[in-house]
Image (cartoon, rainbow, N blue to C red; front, side, top):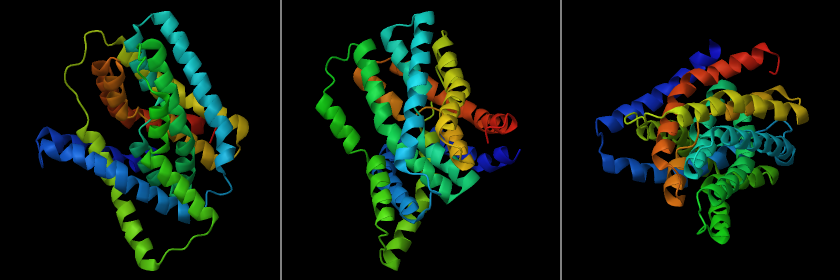
Amino acid sequence: MAASAGLLPVFLLILVGYGLRRYQFPGDSFWDPAERFLYYFLFPLMLIDKLMHADPQGVSLLKLVPPVLVGLAVATFLLWLLNRIFKWSGPMFTSVYQGGIRFNSYIGLAAVQVLYGDSAVAIAALAMAIMIPLLNILCILCFSFYANASSVNPKAVFKAIASNPLIIGSVLGVVFNGLEVNLTQPIESAMRLIGDMALPFGLLCVGAALKLTGLRADSSPILISSAFKLLVFPMVFVASAAIFIDDQQTLLVFLILGALPTATSSYILSRQLGGASGTMAQIISVQTLLGMVTIPLAQWLFTFVGFA
């Protein structure tokens, strides 16, 4: 109940964003630039501010690498097995794969913030700094093998990962924290105000991106991808973390990151590289709505069985 109550404002903001977009306020032309503003400005500054001041309680970037690697490797193998069973087309499998393994960082950091506070946000940001480049590489490889994306340029992929604003913000925050950089009070106050805008604004953008019409008659890829992401992947991710880490807060952060709906940017990648983009859009929307129930359910379940 505590988890549900804590996460209620997160999902209410998502629904508000959906309502604003549905009733065309302040207009359809607003939301695409708003998301760019969030992605390239608000979110990186928020990560810098949170990380440079936070104490992740002895959890280092390198300490998080093994559980992230193991969790993503096991999840990839299980999704490959599912594809062998259901024999989806190549483009369809890319959507199932992205839906089964990627995560929405806006919902993730907002959920971690309201449930566990700034120190947990620092741990989540460190984990994301590892996960984001790995997930981009894994998804690009998936498209290369299953969607005939022979035009994928490795240099372009590396450049996109290296220039990812979320990675840059996380790295700068870690560096500033390690060097104990202290900015002037007006600058730090301005950064804090800007950073405080990022999470609520991000949730509104998540809601605005929802598409709840046109569900396919053949919904099995949507349901299987969603069941894997919201039920199986959290177990895999927390179990991998428990092998290497005994810190309760870190395990809870891995739980939230594992239980998140897939990233809205999955649709863009699917459309660009020849995936089943229509199915991808539906997977994003279905998972975002189901996450309102499954995230607090996952937290309760893992607390009950003694992981946290």
